[in-house]
Length: 305
Length: 330
Image (cartoon, rainbow over all chains, first blue to last red; front, side, top):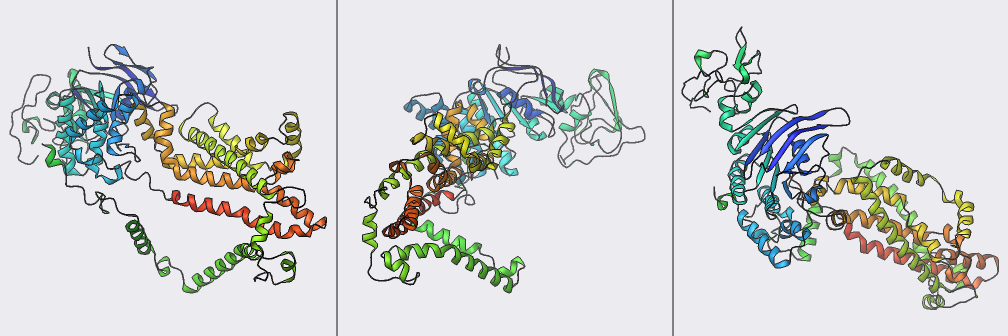
């Protein structure tokens, strides 16, 4: 029984825009699943529907074997870290973290114990008396996580929690987030547009484009056998330059034996394992690349990546 | 990666004022004064010529005088007796100094038409009930309009705004007839209930909620398991304080200065508010030969405006915004 299962989850806005089209997704207990895709691909919409903040057009959201479509967000036992943290500005760090417990009418001593334990996990113990405006970006981010973990939620949602941090801190916080995830062990759904985050953090990664799920699997399987060109792009490293295809275009063997062809600058060299000239292997990425037809390419990883 | 490597020593950028030790009141005032000086930009940088600035300043000065002269007049003349009000120069003092004598008259029923202090109490009661009520209702309604969409919400809001366009004078007759049927003539509630409806207040609160209470904060509170009432009082309301205080001031002033409604619904002088009472005195002083009422009208007017000035001074510290700083990443 999956901790979170989405079946045919669809969102159509009143304007007719289809934000999400029939998403099927399972997140197991204690699993860390990353939803990745470009902005506007429906990943945040999906997350908000799981949280209950967005109305579901069709499909179901279930936690365990319970369909929660009609359960209000406050009764879903879901914790969420928002992109902008959404801390209560007039409350101290202590009160921010404790707000959910206060709502649950948990008695004061127990509340205090849990707030301090959450603060301890996140290294916030010295900052409990501060207001959010007296904190740095990274500290605010950790308060937002503290507010979520203090409740020991069954389901943990994160909406681009690291996107407002500077590059260095972002890398540090990745492992921090994973460490916290392991310590609470809740099924986690993590939304990001950052391919590196997706590939390094997720137990499984779901790639979304235009509201449609492209592929769902472990980072390794996405890397080794991308279902299509778009997925191949996801593990393209930053700094790659697109290259023009030769006269015959660029091809990649896709899931189900379909041969997708593309020409033009949209194709990245490293994003297309084995593309362009099969015999010359995809530079920098070819190690372990295996196409569905069973052929594999050996090659050495370039020192650049 | 361990936590200790992630945690920077209390971020210097976010913490310039040394928050660890709360600064004293005096230090804060001093810092604010310095910041203010720092932010003054010489007019040349606005691309204005000196002459233009001088002219505009002079015009503003003239207008300020124009506004303040009546207040100066009322302060000066509250110290005069009846004869001196008419016979001496209006903008300077004259003997005998009658301020305290005049003031004592406010506690007496001089001509049998009512006692000032009683009207003062009435006005205060109406203003507190009406003003606080109007502010509370405006906060509820403004929050509702700003953060919930429901069937007909736009229509209702436009209707509320449209109410601004109807002058109360046009409603005199229907209002009076309705009140008569509803037994609200000479009733406290007849005065307070209409005062609690404030389209301007609702509009202001809606705008203020829009800019000061982020939707994400409400979402976060819902996920934190807070009920809607709790979200309003614990999360939204503290962020609405500056807007709330503005509406409170506007509403209290509106009820305090309201003349038309009480004139319409009260015909017992013990129920009068200050506006109607002073109007009555003024009318009797001019037309009925009760000239001894003139000094009382003058000092009565002065005492009437003092509470509003005090209220403004008390509330002004809430105008400083910045509540939201740090709630969301910049």
